[in-house]
Image 1 (cartoon, rainbow, N blue to C red):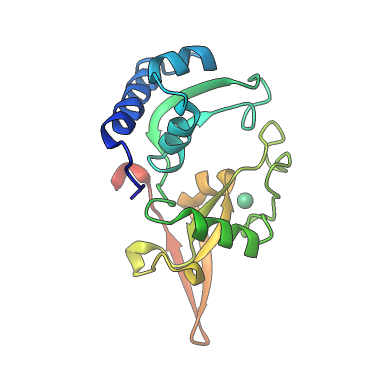
Image 2 (cartoon, rainbow, N blue to C red):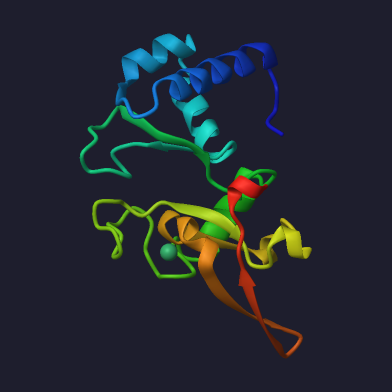
Length: 179
Ligand SMILES: [Zn+2]
């Protein structure tokens, strides 16, 4: 949980932005509009929280070359798996640094155009090596950097886990809609 210096104000502005994005799915919005809706100079941070903590797929010019800096777009109310929920900023930074800011599934480098989809700059998330539903923890030893492209395609991927010298083949089929 985030530290709450002024919880009412914080929850209020995030909720206002959440509602506004959901009411304006598919419409590109500028920073002036969003700042006004949020009513706080911390509006950009609140948007990051909606994306990183709640899983809203809010796109920026880092995700879409057709968007200009300062433009935001939510195309769907589907949420991404909230991999990062409960994982501290420090842990995330540690894991990203340890993984060389590189996706551990496809090798894409943070901030560079993605090989599979060059219109997107690679954005890294924190994923679990052993899924939480399989008993995996939020400990850094069970975390890895994973790009949004692999993250989105993670519903149909075969992971080979080497555990205690036994190779266990696991077929994960997780969909956010079911969680
Ligand atoms: Zn990847």
